[in-house]
Each structure stands twice: as structure tokens, then as C-alpha cells.
Amino acid sequence: MLAILEYEAGNQTSVHRALGALGIPSIITADAALIREAKGLIFPGVGAAGQAMRHLRETGMDSVLREAVAARKPLLGICLGCQILLDSSDENNTRMLGLVAGRCRRFDPALREEDGQPIRIPHMGWNSLRHKSSSPLLHGLHPDAQFYFVHSYYVECRPELSIATTVYGREFCAVYGRDGLWGCQFHPEKSGVPGLRILQNFYLYCAERTHAE
Image (cartoon, rainbow, N blue to C red; front, top):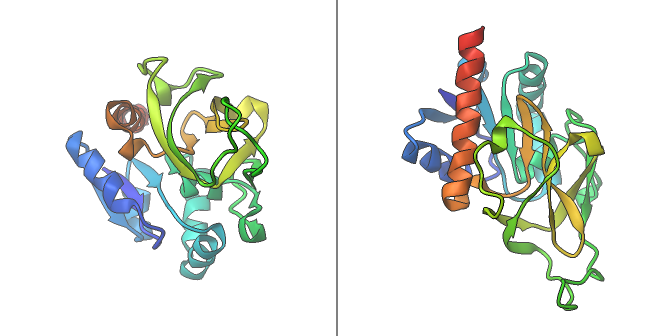
């Protein structure tokens, strides 16, 4: 079973529904014991970084996440969840969890799209990925597959952590991490068949990891 972290930052139900469509058992929970027992952890989220981090600290969920990563439990951060794994964010000048070296920056409104028009913030729409390195998370995806993005801040991380990028006014990291610890800026649960493939890949990785242990 996968655990979907409940921390009042929205989007948990969409992830739970997508996993259910794949026949993957999951539970939405903030119970540390259930998270420890799960094969893997999905850390979704929408909203503001400052408010989300405040809730994580007040409830002790920040320690639960750090414990999960220290124990090398597979973890997938989605959208705000992806950003919170980093060191800091320009949004609310927030200190994040610091589990992955990097930070989030706000899109510069002076940036322009390929047709010369100013970008709109937040970035809302479908983008394809530029694969930078291989990852079991992206196994079997068509090169032209598109994914749904909704965000005003983008990830900056070390080049060796960047698995895939996309472009909106500028090139930025769309998927980062290492085997077993990943962040996706887009919403796989809202990205149709390609997004479901990513969730399935994550579950298969978790299942294989559990079997190997």
C-alpha cells in the first residue's frame, strides 16, 4: 500500500482516485505508524509554501518526512510537495525541508513565450518533457507525452539531480531526484495516461524495493 500524506494542502483525493483507477491500494493519512508501514509515500500539494510548511512543523509531519527519507522509503513529491523537499522558496521567503539541495524561484513576468507574448503567471497548461537522464519513474513514456502544470514558482537544483526539464519562458526542472526520492513539478494524477504511467512506475519501484528487502 502507498501512503498519501495528509497535511491540509489539497489534492490528496485526486491522487487517491488516480491510484484507485490503476488498482493500486493507497490511503490518505497523517498517521506516522501507517506511513512507516507503507511501501512508499506520495507527498502531493497545492497552495502556498509558507502555510504548508507551518502546518508540517506544527503537526510534526516534517519529522515524519525526514525519517522516511533517512530510512530510504520511496517518496514522490508532487507540485508543492516537490518544492517543499528543497532547501528554500522565494514564496513567503520560506525555509523548506532541506531534503534535496535546491530552491524555488518565482517566474519573472518579463519572460516571454516562443511567440514573443509575455508569459502568464501562474503557468497553467500542458508541456512535454526534455529528458536529461534515465529514471525508472519515467520508464516507458513517449517522448512527446505531455503533462499538466499549475505553478507560479519553479525548481532550481543541481544539474546532476535534474531528470527532466520543460520550457515556459525559460527552461526549468520538471522532474528531479535519485532512485527512490523524486519530485515532479507537474500533476501526474491530472495528466491522463502518461501521468498514470508515472504513478504506476512509482508503485512498481516501491513493490520491487519491498520484495528485494
